[in-house]
Image 1: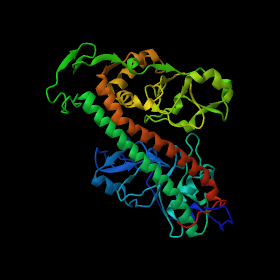
Image 2: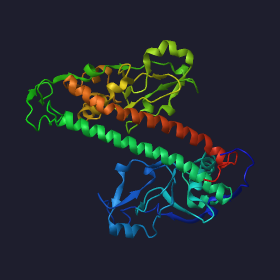
Image 3: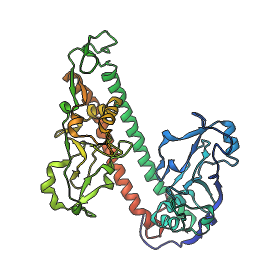
Image 4: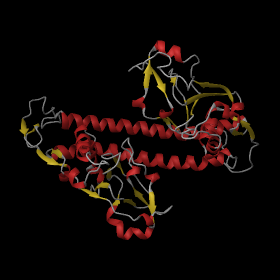
Length: 433
Protein backbone atom coordinates (compact mmCIF):
# COMPACT_ATOMS: atom_id res chain seq x y z
CA UNK A 1 0.00 0.00 0.00
CA UNK A 2 1.33 3.43 -0.88
CA UNK A 3 0.22 7.03 -1.30
CA UNK A 4 2.21 7.97 -4.41
CA UNK A 5 0.99 9.02 -7.84
CA UNK A 6 -2.72 8.52 -8.34
CA UNK A 7 -4.05 6.09 -10.91
CA UNK A 8 -6.29 7.53 -13.58
CA UNK A 9 -9.85 7.48 -12.29
CA UNK A 10 -12.85 7.54 -14.63
CA UNK A 11 -16.33 8.53 -13.56
CA UNK A 12 -19.39 6.59 -14.68
CA UNK A 13 -22.97 6.35 -13.54
CA UNK A 14 -24.06 3.38 -11.48
CA UNK A 15 -26.25 2.32 -14.40
CA UNK A 16 -23.18 2.20 -16.66
CA UNK A 17 -21.45 -0.07 -14.13
CA UNK A 18 -24.19 -2.71 -14.18
CA UNK A 19 -25.07 -5.54 -16.51
CA UNK A 20 -28.30 -6.29 -14.70
CA UNK A 21 -30.60 -4.96 -11.98
CA UNK A 22 -33.07 -7.39 -10.38
CA UNK A 23 -35.91 -5.44 -8.82
CA UNK A 24 -38.96 -7.22 -7.40
CA UNK A 25 -39.75 -4.65 -4.71
CA UNK A 26 -43.45 -4.46 -5.58
CA UNK A 27 -44.05 -8.15 -5.03
CA UNK A 28 -45.62 -9.55 -1.87
CA UNK A 29 -46.83 -13.05 -1.01
CA UNK A 30 -50.41 -11.79 -0.88
CA UNK A 31 -50.25 -10.30 -4.38
CA UNK A 32 -48.88 -13.58 -5.75
CA UNK A 33 -51.32 -15.76 -3.82
CA UNK A 34 -48.51 -17.17 -1.67
CA UNK A 35 -47.86 -17.70 2.02
CA UNK A 36 -44.66 -17.62 4.05
CA UNK A 37 -43.27 -20.99 5.16
CA UNK A 38 -41.14 -22.06 8.10
CA UNK A 39 -38.63 -23.73 5.76
CA UNK A 40 -37.70 -23.26 2.15
CA UNK A 41 -36.10 -20.47 0.14
CA UNK A 42 -35.15 -17.56 2.37
CA UNK A 43 -36.70 -14.18 1.50
CA UNK A 44 -34.06 -11.52 2.13
CA UNK A 45 -35.35 -7.98 2.68
CA UNK A 46 -33.74 -4.60 3.36
CA UNK A 47 -34.24 -5.33 7.04
CA UNK A 48 -31.61 -8.07 6.78
CA UNK A 49 -28.92 -6.36 4.67
CA UNK A 50 -26.07 -4.48 6.34
CA UNK A 51 -22.56 -3.54 5.22
CA UNK A 52 -21.06 -6.44 7.18
CA UNK A 53 -23.55 -9.07 5.98
CA UNK A 54 -26.93 -10.51 6.90
CA UNK A 55 -28.64 -9.21 10.04
CA UNK A 56 -31.69 -10.35 12.03
CA UNK A 57 -31.45 -13.82 10.52
CA UNK A 58 -34.12 -15.21 12.84
CA UNK A 59 -36.70 -12.84 11.30
CA UNK A 60 -36.21 -14.08 7.71
CA UNK A 61 -39.31 -15.65 6.14
CA UNK A 62 -39.27 -18.47 3.58
CA UNK A 63 -41.16 -19.56 0.45
CA UNK A 64 -41.64 -23.10 -0.83
CA UNK A 65 -40.39 -24.29 -4.22
CA UNK A 66 -43.55 -23.26 -6.10
CA UNK A 67 -43.48 -19.85 -4.46
CA UNK A 68 -39.83 -19.36 -5.36
CA UNK A 69 -40.48 -20.15 -9.03
CA UNK A 70 -43.48 -17.82 -9.11
CA UNK A 71 -41.58 -14.93 -7.49
CA UNK A 72 -38.00 -15.22 -8.80
CA UNK A 73 -38.28 -15.14 -12.60
CA UNK A 74 -34.63 -14.14 -12.58
CA UNK A 75 -32.31 -15.54 -9.91
CA UNK A 76 -29.77 -13.86 -7.67
CA UNK A 77 -26.31 -15.28 -8.38
CA UNK A 78 -23.16 -15.63 -6.31
CA UNK A 79 -21.20 -12.37 -6.58
CA UNK A 80 -24.25 -10.12 -6.98
CA UNK A 81 -24.58 -7.06 -4.74
CA UNK A 82 -27.65 -6.64 -2.53
CA UNK A 83 -28.53 -2.95 -2.15
CA UNK A 84 -31.28 -1.56 0.08
CA UNK A 85 -33.58 0.98 -1.53
CA UNK A 86 -34.90 2.50 1.72
CA UNK A 87 -35.13 2.25 5.51
CA UNK A 88 -32.25 3.02 5.17
CA UNK A 89 -31.19 3.38 1.55
CA UNK A 90 -27.65 2.43 0.59
CA UNK A 91 -26.78 -0.56 2.78
CA UNK A 92 -24.88 -2.93 0.51
CA UNK A 93 -23.41 -6.42 0.83
CA UNK A 94 -21.99 -9.09 -1.46
CA UNK A 95 -24.00 -12.27 -1.90
CA UNK A 96 -21.16 -14.80 -1.81
CA UNK A 97 -23.22 -17.98 -1.67
CA UNK A 98 -24.74 -20.48 -4.10
CA UNK A 99 -27.91 -20.50 -1.97
CA UNK A 100 -30.99 -19.52 -3.98
CA UNK A 101 -32.82 -16.64 -2.28
CA UNK A 102 -36.01 -14.64 -2.74
CA UNK A 103 -35.43 -10.93 -3.30
CA UNK A 104 -37.95 -9.35 -0.94
CA UNK A 105 -38.99 -5.89 0.22
CA UNK A 106 -36.95 -2.74 -0.49
CA UNK A 107 -34.01 -4.58 -2.04
CA UNK A 108 -32.15 -4.65 -5.37
CA UNK A 109 -29.72 -7.25 -6.69
CA UNK A 110 -26.98 -5.69 -8.83
CA UNK A 111 -24.73 -7.55 -11.29
CA UNK A 112 -21.64 -5.68 -12.45
CA UNK A 113 -20.26 -5.40 -15.97
CA UNK A 114 -17.06 -7.33 -16.83
CA UNK A 115 -14.87 -4.22 -16.39
CA UNK A 116 -16.32 -3.37 -12.94
CA UNK A 117 -15.08 -5.49 -10.03
CA UNK A 118 -17.99 -6.38 -7.75
CA UNK A 119 -16.01 -6.11 -4.49
CA UNK A 120 -14.68 -2.69 -5.48
CA UNK A 121 -18.20 -1.44 -6.27
CA UNK A 122 -19.46 -2.77 -2.92
CA UNK A 123 -16.87 -0.78 -0.99
CA UNK A 124 -17.29 2.29 -3.17
CA UNK A 125 -21.03 2.37 -2.41
CA UNK A 126 -20.23 1.75 1.26
CA UNK A 127 -17.70 4.61 1.45
CA UNK A 128 -18.63 8.16 2.43
CA UNK A 129 -18.21 9.13 -1.24
CA UNK A 130 -20.67 6.46 -2.41
CA UNK A 131 -23.09 7.11 0.43
CA UNK A 132 -23.13 10.81 -0.45
CA UNK A 133 -24.00 9.95 -4.05
CA UNK A 134 -26.83 7.66 -2.89
CA UNK A 135 -28.23 10.05 -0.30
CA UNK A 136 -28.31 13.06 -2.61
CA UNK A 137 -30.41 11.04 -5.06
CA UNK A 138 -33.00 9.77 -2.60
CA UNK A 139 -36.55 11.02 -2.61
CA UNK A 140 -39.72 10.65 -0.54
CA UNK A 141 -41.78 12.69 1.89
CA UNK A 142 -41.54 10.41 4.93
CA UNK A 143 -39.20 7.53 4.03
CA UNK A 144 -36.25 8.46 1.82
CA UNK A 145 -35.39 5.90 -0.85
CA UNK A 146 -33.87 5.31 -4.26
CA UNK A 147 -35.36 3.81 -7.39
CA UNK A 148 -33.51 2.08 -10.22
CA UNK A 149 -34.11 5.19 -12.34
CA UNK A 150 -31.88 7.16 -9.96
CA UNK A 151 -28.93 4.88 -10.78
CA UNK A 152 -28.46 7.14 -13.83
CA UNK A 153 -27.47 9.98 -11.48
CA UNK A 154 -25.32 8.12 -8.94
CA UNK A 155 -21.68 8.71 -9.90
CA UNK A 156 -19.05 6.01 -9.43
CA UNK A 157 -15.28 6.66 -9.45
CA UNK A 158 -13.53 3.80 -11.26
CA UNK A 159 -9.76 3.28 -11.39
CA UNK A 160 -8.37 0.83 -13.93
CA UNK A 161 -9.55 -2.75 -13.46
CA UNK A 162 -6.45 -4.19 -11.77
CA UNK A 163 -6.59 -1.41 -9.19
CA UNK A 164 -10.25 -2.18 -8.60
CA UNK A 165 -9.29 -5.80 -7.89
CA UNK A 166 -6.45 -4.81 -5.51
CA UNK A 167 -8.65 -2.37 -3.57
CA UNK A 168 -11.66 -4.69 -3.44
CA UNK A 169 -9.66 -7.74 -2.34
CA UNK A 170 -7.69 -5.80 0.29
CA UNK A 171 -10.84 -4.45 1.94
CA UNK A 172 -12.58 -7.81 1.57
CA UNK A 173 -9.70 -9.54 3.40
CA UNK A 174 -10.18 -7.16 6.33
CA UNK A 175 -13.90 -7.90 6.47
CA UNK A 176 -13.26 -11.63 6.08
CA UNK A 177 -10.96 -11.57 9.12
CA UNK A 178 -13.63 -9.71 11.11
CA UNK A 179 -16.22 -12.30 10.06
CA UNK A 180 -13.87 -15.15 10.99
CA UNK A 181 -13.33 -13.65 14.45
CA UNK A 182 -17.08 -13.34 14.88
CA UNK A 183 -17.58 -17.01 13.95
CA UNK A 184 -14.87 -18.07 16.41
CA UNK A 185 -16.54 -16.00 19.13
CA UNK A 186 -19.93 -17.56 18.40
CA UNK A 187 -18.42 -21.05 18.69
CA UNK A 188 -16.69 -20.21 21.98
CA UNK A 189 -19.90 -18.75 23.40
CA UNK A 190 -21.78 -21.87 22.32
CA UNK A 191 -19.21 -24.10 24.03
CA UNK A 192 -19.51 -22.17 27.29
CA UNK A 193 -23.32 -22.27 27.09
CA UNK A 194 -23.34 -26.03 26.48
CA UNK A 195 -21.08 -26.64 29.48
CA UNK A 196 -23.19 -24.29 31.65
CA UNK A 197 -26.40 -26.11 30.68
CA UNK A 198 -24.79 -29.47 31.35
CA UNK A 199 -23.45 -28.49 34.77
CA UNK A 200 -25.99 -26.00 36.15
CA UNK A 201 -29.27 -26.80 34.40
CA UNK A 202 -29.05 -30.59 34.03
CA UNK A 203 -26.75 -30.82 37.09
CA UNK A 204 -24.43 -33.30 35.36
CA UNK A 205 -21.18 -31.69 36.44
CA UNK A 206 -18.37 -34.17 37.20
CA UNK A 207 -18.74 -35.77 40.61
CA UNK A 208 -15.83 -36.86 42.81
CA UNK A 209 -15.18 -39.83 40.50
CA UNK A 210 -15.53 -37.80 37.30
CA UNK A 211 -18.99 -39.16 36.46
CA UNK A 212 -22.01 -36.92 35.64
CA UNK A 213 -23.53 -36.05 39.04
CA UNK A 214 -27.30 -36.34 38.55
CA UNK A 215 -27.22 -39.12 35.94
CA UNK A 216 -25.01 -41.18 38.25
CA UNK A 217 -27.43 -40.85 41.14
CA UNK A 218 -26.04 -37.80 42.92
CA UNK A 219 -28.30 -36.66 45.75
CA UNK A 220 -30.78 -33.91 44.88
CA UNK A 221 -32.71 -31.89 47.48
CA UNK A 222 -35.76 -29.67 47.13
CA UNK A 223 -35.06 -25.93 47.49
CA UNK A 224 -38.16 -24.04 48.51
CA UNK A 225 -36.78 -20.62 47.54
CA UNK A 226 -35.81 -21.75 44.03
CA UNK A 227 -38.85 -24.05 43.70
CA UNK A 228 -36.82 -26.93 42.30
CA UNK A 229 -34.39 -29.66 43.21
CA UNK A 230 -30.70 -28.80 43.36
CA UNK A 231 -27.62 -30.86 44.21
CA UNK A 232 -26.99 -31.39 47.90
CA UNK A 233 -24.76 -28.68 49.32
CA UNK A 234 -25.79 -26.02 46.81
CA UNK A 235 -27.39 -22.84 48.14
CA UNK A 236 -30.23 -20.60 47.09
CA UNK A 237 -28.93 -17.10 46.57
CA UNK A 238 -29.34 -14.13 44.26
CA UNK A 239 -27.33 -12.28 41.66
CA UNK A 240 -26.16 -9.76 44.24
CA UNK A 241 -24.54 -12.58 46.21
CA UNK A 242 -22.35 -13.44 43.22
CA UNK A 243 -21.72 -9.99 41.74
CA UNK A 244 -23.13 -6.77 43.16
CA UNK A 245 -24.64 -4.36 40.65
CA UNK A 246 -24.10 -0.60 40.90
CA UNK A 247 -25.70 2.20 38.93
CA UNK A 248 -23.84 4.63 36.72
CA UNK A 249 -22.92 8.28 37.25
CA UNK A 250 -25.37 11.10 36.50
CA UNK A 251 -23.38 13.07 33.95
CA UNK A 252 -24.77 16.51 33.18
CA UNK A 253 -26.04 17.12 29.66
CA UNK A 254 -23.79 20.19 29.39
CA UNK A 255 -20.71 17.96 29.77
CA UNK A 256 -21.14 16.03 26.52
CA UNK A 257 -18.57 16.75 23.83
CA UNK A 258 -17.14 15.28 20.63
CA UNK A 259 -14.06 13.65 22.18
CA UNK A 260 -12.55 12.83 25.55
CA UNK A 261 -13.42 9.94 27.88
CA UNK A 262 -15.99 7.46 26.49
CA UNK A 263 -19.21 7.05 28.49
CA UNK A 264 -21.43 4.00 28.00
CA UNK A 265 -25.11 4.90 27.66
CA UNK A 266 -28.14 2.66 27.19
CA UNK A 267 -27.95 3.21 23.42
CA UNK A 268 -24.56 1.49 23.34
CA UNK A 269 -25.99 -1.82 24.62
CA UNK A 270 -27.33 -3.63 21.58
CA UNK A 271 -30.29 -5.96 21.06
CA UNK A 272 -27.89 -8.84 20.32
CA UNK A 273 -26.23 -8.51 23.76
CA UNK A 274 -23.10 -6.81 22.47
CA UNK A 275 -21.57 -3.50 23.46
CA UNK A 276 -20.70 -0.80 20.92
CA UNK A 277 -17.95 1.21 22.58
CA UNK A 278 -17.30 3.04 19.30
CA UNK A 279 -20.74 4.74 19.54
CA UNK A 280 -20.13 6.11 23.04
CA UNK A 281 -20.64 9.72 24.02
CA UNK A 282 -17.74 11.66 25.56
CA UNK A 283 -16.95 13.92 28.49
CA UNK A 284 -13.79 15.92 29.17
CA UNK A 285 -10.88 14.17 30.85
CA UNK A 286 -11.21 16.61 33.75
CA UNK A 287 -14.41 14.73 34.75
CA UNK A 288 -12.48 11.54 35.53
CA UNK A 289 -11.72 12.58 39.11
CA UNK A 290 -15.40 12.91 40.07
CA UNK A 291 -16.56 9.83 38.11
CA UNK A 292 -13.63 7.42 38.53
CA UNK A 293 -15.67 5.15 40.83
CA UNK A 294 -17.88 4.46 37.81
CA UNK A 295 -15.09 3.23 35.56
CA UNK A 296 -15.51 -0.11 33.77
CA UNK A 297 -12.59 -2.37 32.96
CA UNK A 298 -11.93 -5.10 30.41
CA UNK A 299 -14.21 -8.04 31.25
CA UNK A 300 -16.70 -6.11 33.38
CA UNK A 301 -20.39 -6.46 32.46
CA UNK A 302 -22.88 -3.62 31.94
CA UNK A 303 -26.66 -3.95 31.74
CA UNK A 304 -29.45 -1.62 30.56
CA UNK A 305 -31.79 -0.58 33.40
CA UNK A 306 -34.44 1.20 31.35
CA UNK A 307 -35.85 1.60 27.86
CA UNK A 308 -36.37 -0.83 24.99
CA UNK A 309 -33.16 -2.74 25.75
CA UNK A 310 -33.84 -3.16 29.48
CA UNK A 311 -32.12 -6.30 30.74
CA UNK A 312 -29.75 -6.47 27.78
CA UNK A 313 -26.08 -6.64 28.69
CA UNK A 314 -22.63 -6.46 27.16
CA UNK A 315 -19.03 -7.25 28.09
CA UNK A 316 -16.70 -4.26 28.25
CA UNK A 317 -13.83 -4.43 25.78
CA UNK A 318 -10.56 -2.55 25.61
CA UNK A 319 -10.42 1.22 25.22
CA UNK A 320 -7.46 3.55 24.81
CA UNK A 321 -8.94 5.72 27.56
CA UNK A 322 -10.91 4.94 30.74
CA UNK A 323 -14.54 3.94 30.07
CA UNK A 324 -17.17 5.45 32.36
CA UNK A 325 -20.77 4.37 32.97
CA UNK A 326 -23.76 6.69 32.63
CA UNK A 327 -26.87 6.65 34.83
CA UNK A 328 -29.52 4.02 34.04
CA UNK A 329 -26.74 1.63 33.09
CA UNK A 330 -25.79 -0.98 35.68
CA UNK A 331 -22.22 -2.20 36.19
CA UNK A 332 -21.30 -5.65 37.54
CA UNK A 333 -17.87 -5.17 39.08
CA UNK A 334 -16.07 -8.50 39.01
CA UNK A 335 -12.89 -7.58 40.85
CA UNK A 336 -9.30 -7.18 39.72
CA UNK A 337 -9.51 -10.29 37.51
CA UNK A 338 -13.00 -10.12 35.98
CA UNK A 339 -12.48 -13.17 33.75
CA UNK A 340 -12.24 -15.36 36.86
CA UNK A 341 -15.95 -14.68 37.57
CA UNK A 342 -17.27 -13.69 34.15
CA UNK A 343 -18.28 -17.11 32.70
CA UNK A 344 -20.83 -18.03 35.40
CA UNK A 345 -22.30 -14.52 35.50
CA UNK A 346 -22.68 -14.03 31.75
CA UNK A 347 -24.27 -17.45 31.22
CA UNK A 348 -26.64 -16.91 34.14
CA UNK A 349 -27.70 -13.56 32.67
CA UNK A 350 -28.39 -15.38 29.42
CA UNK A 351 -30.89 -17.78 31.00
CA UNK A 352 -34.53 -17.40 29.98
CA UNK A 353 -35.72 -17.14 33.60
CA UNK A 354 -33.49 -14.09 34.15
CA UNK A 355 -34.81 -12.29 31.06
CA UNK A 356 -38.41 -13.12 31.95
CA UNK A 357 -37.93 -11.91 35.53
CA UNK A 358 -36.42 -8.62 34.34
CA UNK A 359 -39.31 -8.13 31.92
CA UNK A 360 -41.90 -8.69 34.67
CA UNK A 361 -40.14 -6.40 37.15
CA UNK A 362 -39.55 -3.66 34.57
CA UNK A 363 -43.04 -3.59 33.08
CA UNK A 364 -45.98 -1.59 34.35
CA UNK A 365 -44.59 1.89 33.74
CA UNK A 366 -44.74 4.03 30.60
CA UNK A 367 -41.14 3.04 29.96
CA UNK A 368 -39.63 -0.26 31.18
CA UNK A 369 -37.48 0.40 34.20
CA UNK A 370 -35.66 -1.74 36.76
CA UNK A 371 -33.41 -0.87 39.69
CA UNK A 372 -30.02 -2.27 40.64
CA UNK A 373 -31.52 -3.62 43.89
CA UNK A 374 -34.20 -5.52 41.96
CA UNK A 375 -31.60 -7.22 39.77
CA UNK A 376 -29.43 -8.00 42.80
CA UNK A 377 -32.41 -9.82 44.36
CA UNK A 378 -33.24 -12.05 41.37
CA UNK A 379 -32.76 -15.68 42.54
CA UNK A 380 -29.59 -17.48 41.50
CA UNK A 381 -28.42 -20.91 42.57
CA UNK A 382 -24.96 -20.80 44.13
CA UNK A 383 -23.03 -24.05 43.45
CA UNK A 384 -20.38 -25.49 45.71
CA UNK A 385 -17.21 -23.41 45.39
CA UNK A 386 -15.10 -26.17 43.83
CA UNK A 387 -17.68 -26.73 41.06
CA UNK A 388 -18.10 -23.01 40.42
CA UNK A 389 -14.34 -22.39 40.36
CA UNK A 390 -13.78 -25.30 37.95
CA UNK A 391 -16.41 -23.99 35.52
CA UNK A 392 -14.94 -20.49 35.54
CA UNK A 393 -11.42 -21.89 35.15
CA UNK A 394 -12.42 -23.95 32.10
CA UNK A 395 -14.40 -21.17 30.42
CA UNK A 396 -12.40 -18.05 31.24
CA UNK A 397 -9.92 -18.71 28.36
CA UNK A 398 -12.94 -18.74 26.01
CA UNK A 399 -13.90 -15.23 27.04
CA UNK A 400 -10.31 -14.05 27.03
CA UNK A 401 -10.13 -15.09 23.36
CA UNK A 402 -13.55 -13.53 22.66
CA UNK A 403 -12.40 -10.18 24.07
CA UNK A 404 -9.13 -10.33 22.12
CA UNK A 405 -11.08 -10.98 18.92
CA UNK A 406 -13.45 -8.10 19.68
CA UNK A 407 -10.50 -5.76 20.23
CA UNK A 408 -8.91 -6.93 16.98
CA UNK A 409 -12.20 -6.40 15.14
CA UNK A 410 -12.46 -2.90 16.52
CA UNK A 411 -8.96 -2.08 15.24
CA UNK A 412 -9.64 -3.69 11.84
CA UNK A 413 -12.90 -1.77 11.48
CA UNK A 414 -11.15 1.50 12.32
CA UNK A 415 -8.41 0.70 9.76
CA UNK A 416 -10.94 -0.15 7.05
CA UNK A 417 -13.05 2.94 7.68
CA UNK A 418 -9.95 5.16 7.73
CA UNK A 419 -8.61 3.75 4.45
CA UNK A 420 -11.93 3.52 2.62
CA UNK A 421 -12.34 7.16 1.52
CA UNK A 422 -8.66 7.51 0.59
CA UNK A 423 -8.75 4.34 -1.51
CA UNK A 424 -11.88 5.49 -3.28
CA UNK A 425 -10.54 8.91 -4.28
CA UNK A 426 -7.07 7.64 -5.24
CA UNK A 427 -5.08 9.17 -2.37
CA UNK A 428 -3.86 5.73 -1.34
CA UNK A 429 -3.09 2.80 -3.61
CA UNK A 430 -2.89 -0.93 -2.92
CA UNK A 431 -0.12 -2.95 -4.51
CA UNK A 432 -1.24 -6.00 -6.49
CA UNK A 433 -2.27 -8.82 -4.16
